Image (cartoon, rainbow, N blue to C red; front, side, top):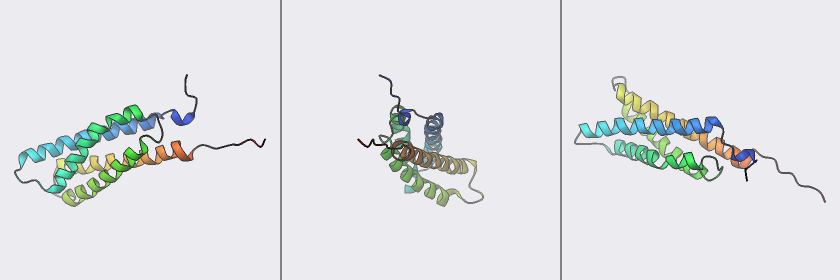
Length: 140
């Protein structure tokens, strides 16, 4: 039986934002892995950003399956949005100077893109799952 509830239809932009988050995480993971392979000493902030990007790449594939069910993926998006917020702060602290280099600024930019679209997913999923529908009752 097909579901006719509009809350279960995933808007195309929601799918697009999930793909963009995953691609951003892959780019951040690749560049940070390159940085880690070049150095013997790696600060803990870079390791944190690498772990968050790897977890996002691994676990965010689930969001492609559960993305049509509001509420199931909301907690997942909330947790990862806070983790990526900390990554944005660490990237800004590490690479916001003028002579940082193109790869460093790329990590900073894609970290922000992943956080921004995760925040959009939280707001969108909250609205679709909890706030966007009207309840009616009949007086019998």
